Image (cartoon, rainbow, N blue to C red; front, side, top):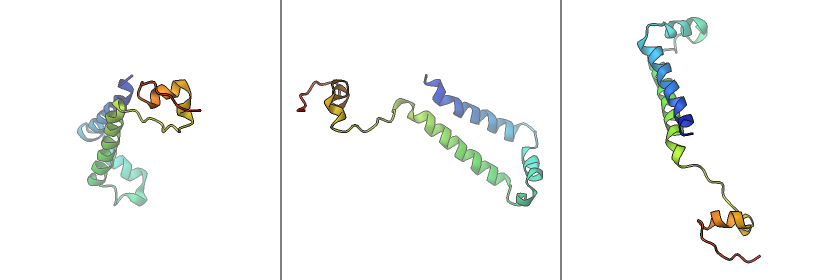
Length: 96
């Protein structure tokens, strides 16, 4: 299931390739669509937004091997199934 983490990065790369390298006129369309913001819609703006998109997608891909583990309370560690995960697989006696 690692491919799910890489799918947004692949989609973002395809999107950016289409937006900047294939003549499609996205920037011109964006300016016509929002005329009040036309002055602020520059190539620099699009580059910054797409760079942020790539960073977020890369971060999503980078955490695929380090899942966030929920914090377990001492009470949760008293049950057998949680005790094994709280102690890293070692069996330890936990007083009730």
